[in-house]
Amino acid sequence: MELLSALSLGELALSFSRVPLFPVFDLSYFIVSILYLKYEPGAVELSRRSPVASWICAMLYCFGSYILADLLLGEAPIDYFSNNSSVLLASAVWYMIFFCPMNLFYKCISVLPVKLIFVAMKEVVRVRKIAVGIHHAHHHYHHGWFIMIATGWVKGSGVALMSNFEQLLRGVWKPETNEILHMSFPTKASLYGAILFTLQQTRWLPISKANLIFFCTLFMVSCKVFLTATHSHASPFDTIEGFICPVLFGSAWGDHGDHHHDDHGSSQDAHGGPSSFHAPQPLAKSKEELNEGSRKRKAKKAE
Image (cartoon, rainbow, N blue to C red; front, side, top):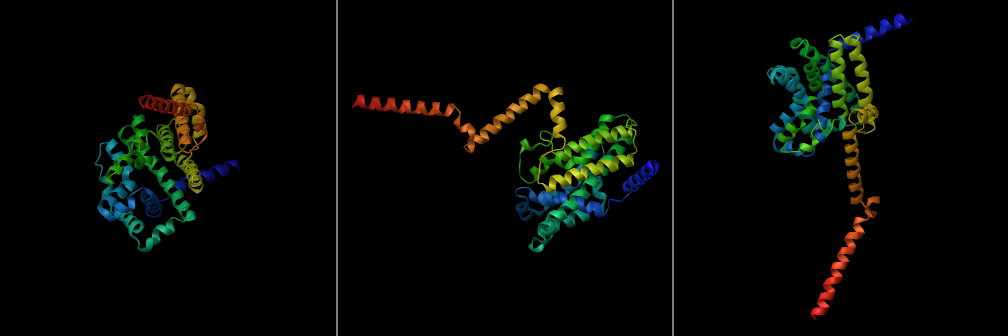
């Protein structure tokens, strides 16, 4: 019975890994990507003021991972734009999201149950892109583990990694939003997934690629759908990192915690929280009163 269940699971994973992404899954990927672009401050105004710049930003959201991967492997960064069907489909989604009459298309896809379906399908594309990126890099560099990991990573989260460049096209410069400095869950998951697929590609991980794609997709879909449904920005890796990072990077982790505590305290001060009762504020007031009193005494003496 266990053997039959294992065989059925293997067949299911193999069939799932062979499901074509175009057009249904790619369409979902484009919808969610450009939907996130519309959430960015000033994106709607940019689409009215400069539709060409808005379209280029949308294409970066849809194909940024391919551009970065081609740059890493020394290939033409605009090579993927020869795929006319994908570019036309992404352009149609961009137009419908930004310019549909009465904003009907945006309102329909923004409904939470519908959005969750698209988010789940986008994660299917993300995992498949990581696997394809690892395979592509392995074809060029058979023993280049770090090259394979880097290629798979940018394949899975290239849009986020080049967010600062995309912001420049919108006339925004926020270097503090660098994705490497503040990794989101998809970026971390893409990195860890790239490591797993690299180990599998180099035969250090005893599992078939189809099964690894299947299990990674289940994990990504479950986590991303839950985070989107609860409007949470947390990461499932936080608990594990909370145990490992203090051991491996103890000093840096402690400094980061102190800095976070200071920022939290300053935010409480701004809202009149508990930090507003710290000692320095009364001391500052008493100095001002003393100075004012000394000025009054000098004025009386002058009179």
